[in-house]
Amino acid sequence: MKHIFAADIGGTHSRFAHFILHADNRLSLEETRWLMTADAESFPALLDDLRFSGFPLTPDVADISVFAVAGPVEEGVKSRPPLISWNIDLRGFQAGAGGFLLINDFVAQAFACRSQVAEEAEVVLAGSPVPGAATGIIGAGTGLGKALLVHDGRDRYIAVPSEGGHADFPFSGEQECRYQQFLMRERGERQITFNSVVSGSGLSLLHSFLAGRQKRPEEVADELLSYPETLEWAARFYARACRNYVLETLALDGLYVAGGVAAKTPEILRHPAFEKEFRSSHTMSHLLENVPVSLITDRNSGLWGAAVLARQTLWNAADA
Figure 1 (tube, rainbow, N blue to C red):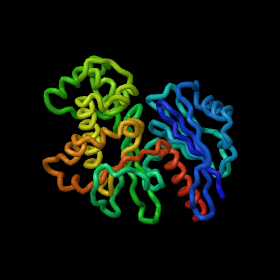
Figure 2: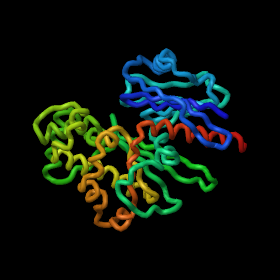
Figure 3: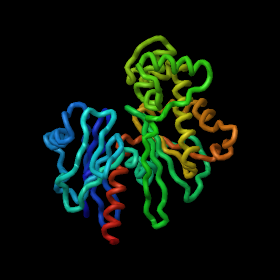
Figure 4: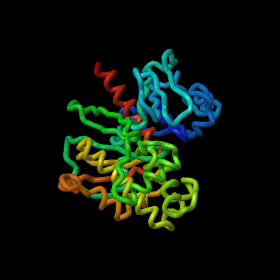
């Protein structure tokens, strides 16, 4: 039996979990804790807050620790998350016997596709997965995350991270171009990225543009069914992000959608505009019509993914 410390550090929430890896390789989730990321002045302070909250497991006694963070990882030990006010530097970090891993948060989401949360996911669009092909994961929250999961041919998986949320969003048509100009004025930015469009704040700005009313993201999400135009645009934009990622990566095994926006407002993915936009392509519709899309509703999916990677790492160590 092994004890796994898992962390999923996002722009809004930081989630922590204690998993047990049993002798039969089964993972069980023992306890979770959520903290507000902005309440901590630094990464060490965040871990202090966790300890003071009474969380039963710490990285120094865990058999292995996995930290997933909403940002690119440098040299395996550092990260400068773009949506968090502090950096992470784990050089000299005191961890248990199995050490630690620092990974992008959507690497964790990718490994969650091989956990029970994927088995419990809601099928949004049915399709025919291509065996052996890559699996995509995408999700909007504070920003938009993406990653790809590929089989290594030896009963192991490799996750490929992405910072595609910072790429320019592809607007189309007169109305959308007017919205682009609106976003440039509101945000004071010359480039409008996926993060600015397919995210919680993007949902709020979209509603402001279409309805002329300013509301917090959570208010728009709670009342989205009352605003059909906002819902239709949000579904179209989210589908465009999904479609482009599938085409860029040939994630023909299927696409999983995670993150706070879709979990809170699944109506976005269920809207007819989502399927219409996702399947639409002048040249590749024959591929897109066979790609299944599933919604992961478990908001601890990043923690499950971190635990799955920890298990695979422990397997690799045992096989060495």
